[in-house]
Length: 253
Length: 253
Image (cartoon, rainbow over all chains, first blue to last red; front, side):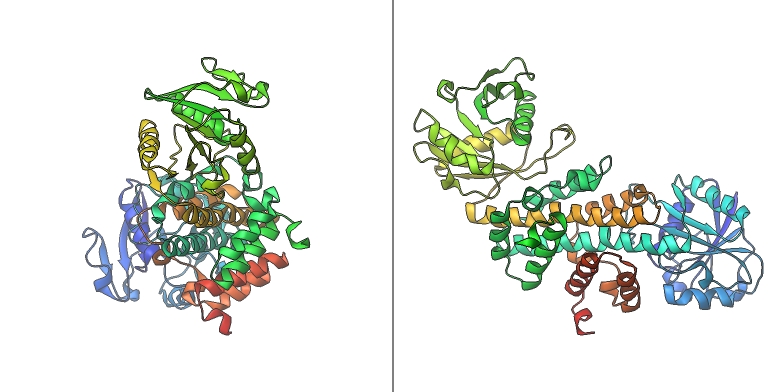
């Protein structure tokens, strides 16, 4: 049984507590947060504290706080040589205080408090200073049936950037589409099966190999019509630059 | 029982034949294609022809050919006053010859021959010149358990544009991400659960309300780092313009 202390009550902290609570191989023995009311409601079996000097002894301390608070929180810990990890995609392992055994335990997923933990798969990016600690974090992932990948800090920075494209910017594509449907009294729901299938399609196929649409076809007439139809000047720019990435012939026009 | 003739053997033609073959309320009585070998293999029960003068009498003729061939194919039909429809997202209903009852039956989905018709939902955009024909196309959708929406040609043009954003351009986001992971020896598979969840999330929520990431947070330090990390100058431009759409403060910097 792995004993874990969670620090922080944001989306990731909450998600991890819920995940671990469902596992018979992990025990969240304590949950720390500056503001007790944020964590007091759930789950009752876990000891809560807002005093960072009172942390219990555990196998792993997971610091799930805002990126800019990682350094401060890890420095305040009153013990040495224990396994501590942060959960950030963009911060180096060295952001953590070196008085403890440092690691990263980054869930590569878009997690909100409303996420249904029964239906969401979360792979973890693991990075440890000490080889033996890697095994502990792997065991932690196995205990919640999650895939894990060994990703160093330099790779994680790039991966986080890639995640911005597939999550933040893809969601922005959905927003632009919704603006277009709203403007034209079209039910946005009609696009949802297409959105899902677009994501499903690359489960087995390289995105380059499934690219479709006017740009890849070289259908410059439709492209021109589409650009004319867009009312937002920035949307026009997005359309143009993405089309020129899909088809290099486009920019020659 | 609705009797249907399909014209064309592209992705849409193939998909429709397979869908209708599974329904007990529709009968594909004939499949036309210029090149017989493209359609001869499947399914054996359907009569095939490459002679457009030999089409059987049917309730609906579905012209699933390339956009630029719709006019020509519909003009060549040797009968009048029957219900004919094209399946294009971007062409007006009037692209069809007026000697027949014109309609549009546009499947809003990314369809390839490898698509698993058992797991793919396809809503249809319906437009008819005659009210009574709307009922026939609605019946056709019901027979294959597909949702339908009444969308006129002007709306369909905008919807097709919105579909370019959620399909073609979203897929381009996936391609950029794959370039980044490939460049850094990271397994692209690690991003797939995030890609799926990003799509799933807007099933019940407005994309604007679930926007996350450095841009919406106003985390300009991370944005700067990300732009420096991108090696492709166009990817930098995409990053900048999408960030400025997500957060209007970004462009003021």
